[in-house]
Image 1 (cartoon, rainbow, N blue to C red):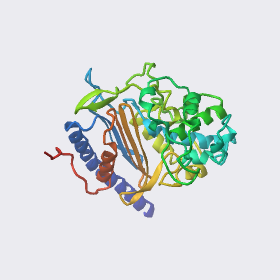
Image 2 (image 1 turned 135 degrees about the vertical axis):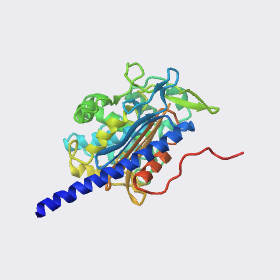
Image 3 (image 1 turned 90 degrees about the horizontal axis):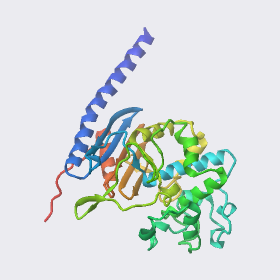
Image 4 (image 1 turned 30 degrees about the vertical axis):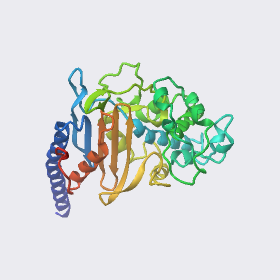
Length: 359
């Protein structure tokens, strides 16, 4: 009798959770539809709780010239969301004994600058190395369209003075994560994209994710756009060898949900490594993730931005909530959108998108 009571309570709880989920989904769609109608969003979104997808839907156009709509299967460039995959790959190599996070980078970089002698892999992972970000160099816009093997990109910032002493403070640096990719390739003895396919995407059955290339024929790839004088325009070209381990991956909201779910398990790395990945060092930055408080809850997330694309993944691990927003319009406010979508899930206040008031 007692057992039957437990079963009935469990069924009731599941039914109640399903009912709440059914109430949330229309609100999520209403918000995103309003944002799209106002011309402020084009992309795909997935929102999930407790392993259940509440909403997975495309909005706007994957290709504005052919009127092809976005769907949950549309592939988007991830920009800096790539960094969390790079960080986990480095921890995998640490577990295999092929490197140590505490190792100095001089162990892996030939003709290492004297200024880099104190820099460790940990400093690269946490953006505390002091190496200036090559994407902020004056010539970046004129060189981003040129093929640049990772060794060539490293040479671009190898001779630059450090902005500060290693470990002194947090300063976001794409150079640091490109250098991590350089080290990964040397240690693993294979290309960065191949390593991820074999050790992350393959095991998780993330069949619609990979290292992007403009030359490759990629089914269901979204075209990237930017806004010019208020109108949509094709984004400026970037050769995808340039961002490398700092921002060259592509994926879908569906595949990123598989990634989110895997991070609750030890499929890819041990719990000890996961704890290291999600422990912030400085500036609320851990290994490839920002870890802080949002909505009065523990928050783990990262944004990405690259020519033609804006991305965001937000995770609330204590609530098992994931909000994934991928847009094929550069500079889209994916962060505020993800914040509001999370508020809807948590039953908190949010504002529906509306026309901006002004002169």
